[in-house]
Image (cartoon, rainbow, N blue to C red):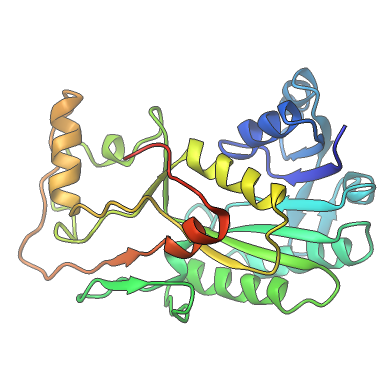
Amino acid sequence: MKAQISVIGCGWLGLPLAKSLITDGFKIHGSTTSVEKLKTLNQFEIEPFLLTLNENGISGDYAQFLSGSETIIVNIPPGLRRDPDKNHVAELKHLIHAIEDSTIKNVLYISSTSVFQNEENFKTITENTKPNAKSNSGQQLIEIENMFINNPNFNTTILRFGGLFDAQRHPSKMLSGRENVSNPEAPINLIHKTDCIAIIHKIIEIKSWNNILNAAYPKHTNKEQYYKTYCKQHNLPLPNYNTSAKSKGKIIDSSKLVQLLDYTFKVEP
């Protein structure tokens, strides 16, 4: 049996990640905010914990959830679309204090390439590019990244994913049939769930701590072309784009990740 890992957030990405880590020989503590899901985690041999982060603290047995783990994977979407007034930074401050008082030595924080602004010149974004998001969600993520990176009590690697997808959850399905879709010329920056999980495995395997990595498949077709082609192939109504306004976007460069982890992307969007 390998070391124990705590995975906070066993949802769309976190649950298959936890299952694959168990297959790889790790013992997993997994958290969920849903009582119903505790049974599911148990079925997959994930030791389940009911935890909820809020602005005033953490509800649930977080000390036991962290106890004995050397690494924590923090995979919690900010949830600011649903609740724009939420203070996600305050929630994560409580988690960081709990980590400081635990056995955790390494933190893998799952962030997003939305910490970077979309611009008309489709700037190429590397890990040396300074995050400059103006959105509430983007600015909160930037602050949280800095709280983790600058904390001397543990090692942190920040992993910024582009647009997450798999066969069931594909952005084309959300855009299908929509009118007046913006930014038709902007490049895509997508990453399949299979690659997300494999990259996380590689970071843990080679102990690639104290890094910042951008992760998106290195194919950047423009959105209009890509989504229309996908919708045609899957017999979905085509989205219609607003071509009157200038498109804004960015190109996420993942070459540092490829080099550092000796990684080859597995699933093309």
